Image (cartoon, rainbow, N blue to C red; front, side, top):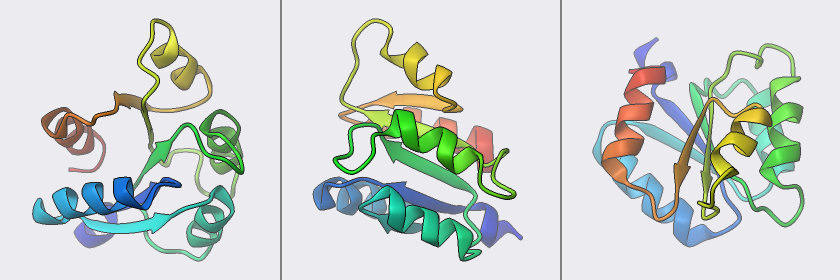
Length: 125
C-alpha cells in the first residue's frame, strides 16, 4: 500500500517542469507519473494507476487547473484525492482562488522543494 500512496501524478504542459519535479521527487522515494494534458491525466486516473496525489499546473493550454480540478474531483472515487496546485501565479488572491477551485494545497513556482516535501508528507507520507 505504501507504494500506491507515494505515487504522484504531475500534470504540466512543460516537459522541463515535469523532468525537474520527477527527478527531485524520485530522489526522495516517490514514484512519479506525468501527463501533459488534462485529458491524458484523466485517462491515467481512470486506469487505476494507484495515484496518491496530483500536482496540477494551473495554466494549461487545453484546460486550466481551475476547470480541471473540479472535473477530476468529480470522477468516480477521486473526491478525496489530494490535488496541489503548482503555479507561477503568486499574486495576492491566487492561493485562495486555487483553493476555491478545489485544490487541497498550493505551491508557487519556482517550487520550494522543502515546502513541497512538507505538503507531500502531510497528504501521503
